[in-house]
Structure formats: structure tokens, C-alpha cells
Image 1 (tube, rainbow, N blue to C red):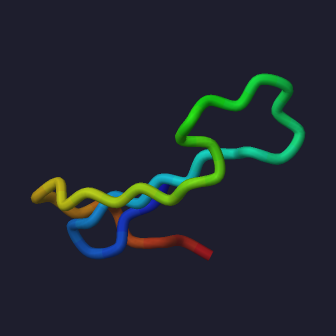
Image 2 (image 1 turned 90 degrees about the vertical axis):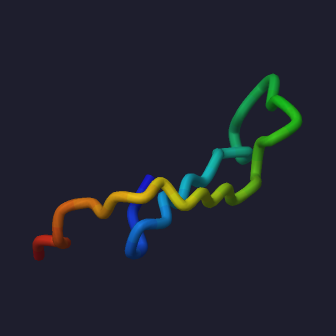
Image 3 (image 1 turned 180 degrees about the vertical axis):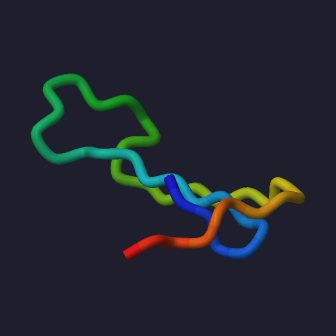
Length: 41
């Protein structure tokens, strides 16, 4: 998971999963109305 502005972005693994569910391998994004902390090196 990560934030891009106020959008929360989530990726779901599909490689190496024995029983993937229908959303596996997808990218999900939702505007959650808040931002996360700044990235740190």
C-alpha cells in the first residue's frame, strides 16, 4: 500500500499464490480524503 496524494493505492500479489482470489494481480485505488506521511529515503 502507498499514498499518492489523497489516493490510497493497493496491489495484490498473484505470483506464487496457490489459491489466488479473483482480485489477485490487480491494482486498486481509492480517494480516502487524507494523505499519508512523506516518503523517507
